Amino acid sequence: MDNVLKIENLYVSYSNGPVVRDLSITLSRGVIGCLLGPSGCGKTTVLRTIAGFEKSERGRISLHGQNVDIKGTFIPPEKRRTGMVFQDYALFPHLTAYGNVAFGLNKLPARIIKERVHDLLDNVGLRDLEDSYPHELSGGQQQRVALARALAPQPEILLLDEPFSNLDVNLRESLVHEVRNIIKNTGATALLVTHNQSEAFAMADEIGVMSSGKLLQWGTAQDLYHRPACKQVAEFIGKGTFLNCKVVGDSAVRTALGVLKGSPVHPLKPGERGVVLIRPEDIVHDDHSPFKTAISDRVYRGSNILYTLNLDSGEKVLSMVPSHHDHPEGTGLGIRVELEELVVFVGDRIQNPEVRSQEKSPEMNLQVV
Image (cartoon, rainbow, N blue to C red; front, side, top):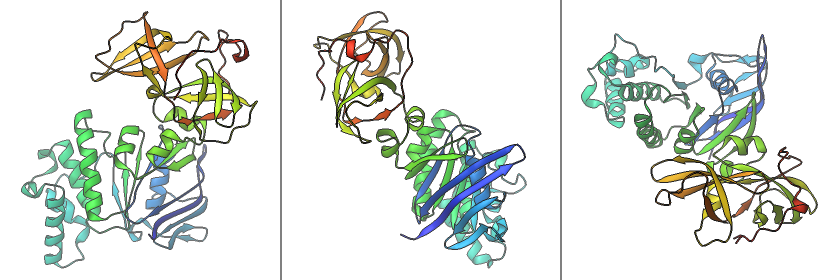
């Protein structure tokens, strides 16, 4: 697969300081990538720099092998063959759906324009609404028109800036899958920026987590969730808690839940201390378990309940339990641990005056898989 986008050591700063710091990513043809992170982390600046709306201070951006932003070379936005879907869609209110999609195609023969616009409107399911103006369309329909307009010039890469943020939750969930299918059907390469993990996981093939202008990790959703490169990624992706631990083998740690074994994500050395990541699905409800934990909080989610459990050490873990196992706060919940990956960050510790040292904690009688 050839590389459509290659960014090397990108550095962008404004008057108040650096916004993007030495960021490097590569996107192959047909891949949907995503930059995921909180507001202000620099992800939109990366998108705008790829499009040519911002200039880098150093580093290199190339599109399909051509340098578009490097010291001494800057290709203007209109010559970069990028398509942009803005957060507010930016449709022309005086143009119909057809007119909006056809807007950037005026140099092509009329017959080609008509064929391409109709193909794209068919692709996004709006052929019957081609004569409708933006104010006559729903938010989801406007978003699909904006997508078709961005795809019409057949760009090298499609850039999407928080494209679902203006939609209600139910529409957003269904449209994410629709937009992914549309992009895949056209064979386009795309880069999305969002702060929403669910959107990133549902939409993208590859995801980069950003914080304070830096790329912390680039990989699949599976990589980020189960094999986080650092504690910051583990905290940002999904839900989970950390328990203080001491390494007692190359694949075992001692915690307030006893000795936990699993496939280590990072190399471990006996005697090292740190924290181990525990996901809600690692703590399995078991009425027959001899080990009971006190429920301090519960969040009902329809199909399941997320319980917060207090351990004798003063630490807490989360457990995701089917909702027909309904237990009130203050009661005990039988649990067992089912852990596959052992995600340990050496050197980090959770400071809690109630937590006893692990050497003095009694061994828990837990079934650890």
